[in-house]
Length: 114
Image (cartoon, rainbow, N blue to C red; front, side):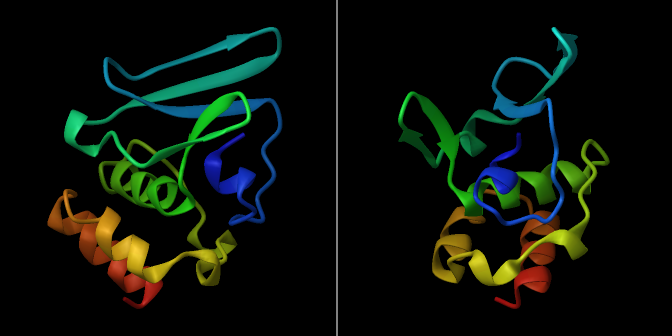
């Protein structure tokens, strides 16, 4: 499951699929019929996680910005047409994008009309 799927932001349903940001390295593997993908991001971009029950997850805005960031490098695929942009807090998006490269900021602003 992706954070965007968890929050109901995307209409794409991914089963047996888990993604996470990582500080050490990018790696993908399968185990017991499940796919796990870890994407390395810079330490300065590793923030805005919340605890829900027994796990930590990024906020929906952070998950989206990370997806755009990784997409801009060709490391991630995302169907922007499947996203409900009205579910994002625009003020929070403006705050979250601050440490990201200009290319990521421009794309987020364009997609979310901020």
